[in-house]
Length: 224
Image 1 (spheres, rainbow, N blue to C red):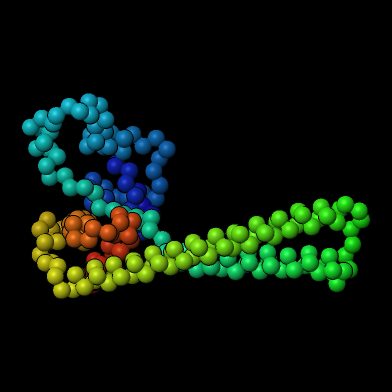
Image 2 (cartoon, rainbow, N blue to C red):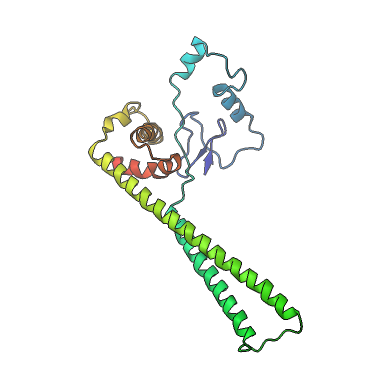
């Protein structure tokens, strides 16, 4: 990862310069990054929030586009579903084997004996513990089915987006703020910002994290 020492924004690996500030990225920000604080205050003032913008302020901000997303929090639901499934299998096995062991002990098939009331206490405590394992396994299977359904819906949405990209998208829209003299990083950020906006308008069910997750894949599909 790289960071802009002026505005403080984080970039993915492979970028060497901030597209907004025009300065080289650093590996990490200093603890007291006053330049970044001043930059944020300049473009996002926190005082007099309800005060109207002046004509001069509007002239400065009219050409400032929202920053493109540089990271994604989306996690493939199918990967999470498989984790839940694996956990459910382990929990079920532990719970069922444990309950079976208690039964075999009570039937004297497994020669483990406890004296007096301790035998009842062991059965109660261990039986409750193994029951909890089984209940957790059931809950994991429920989450697995939910995530599997979400993964199927995301795959369908992804395919719809691909079809739109391939058959309906007017690529010239993505280049409306791109100049031939711009370097590839600037072109990437300008194009993906417009692409993100077009996706949000076109697909109502598209969440922000899923859109950010596939945006680079879509860019490669268009310009690759």
